[in-house]
Image 1: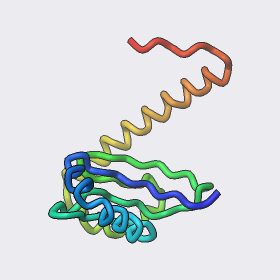
Image 2: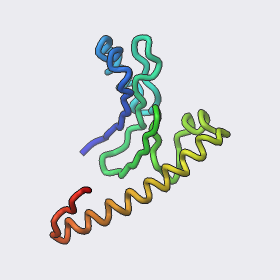
Image 3: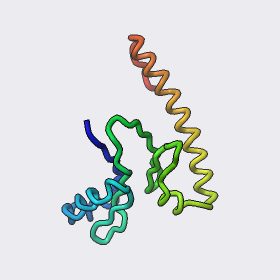
Length: 125
């Protein structure tokens, strides 16, 4: 197996990424171990790189706006925490996203169980 690195690319930055592909790839490579933002051309954050983890490690992320956070009981991303510490909007947003993730996981589990039991997929209305 090996190691994997999750990346959130900001779509409005594709022009700079296409104009500076080598700078982009180098930025991804340099950010893979510690995680962080990758800037290219005149765009300060074309992508956010999450810390590398072994392929056997389960990882779940929430994305919203221009950020991504790992759903990690240890919450080890100090850079992320420092950026949003003390912002009530962010606390409300995380609470909402956690409720949404809980509901999405319950629905995923229900549909997966149905599929594993050999039942046909449900139609989406």
